[in-house]
Length: 214
Image (tube, rainbow, N blue to C red; front, side, top):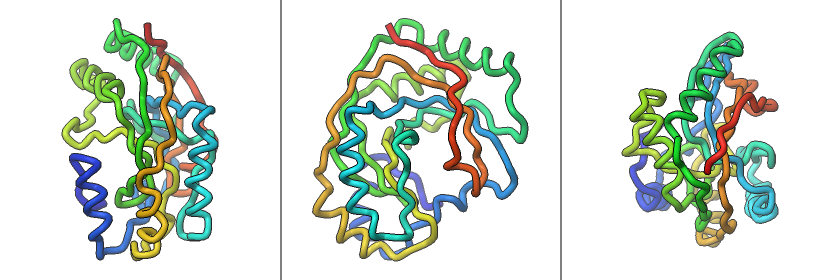
């Protein structure tokens, strides 16, 4: 994986000038079966049509795997990775810890103003300080080790299923760079159990907990 970006502007400028191949998203995951437990914010269903419209422009690139609607989300933080299913007590502990860390957080708005590209996928930028506030509180509580200096909340629309030169993707994304999905009110975060091997990462995820805001 290439270096992590510290701003969306840095990511976009790197993409515009990129000469190295875009990277295989699936290669970052283990070959053997593994499960991830993590917090996320689902994309509002009312914004999915706009996301699908952008995805349609990527459909002709066979080396881009488009994410299904049910996978569209803003990732916050992992809780654990393991080869076995977490116990009910472990899940309850993760929810309790987040409830404590997020005490007093009120519902907040997120905006999705632009399209961007990371090393291994096409993303929609997220504006609004809610995700960073949530992750910061988890870090302060010792419940997350997310490096805040490179935490760029985003929604992934498609991932690269093999390395590929970036010129064709630039032809698609540059005219659409300023495409906005809209905005949504976020009232809760959900905890998901995710198959996390190279062959299972896009299998159905299981919601195992949630924390409401306000």
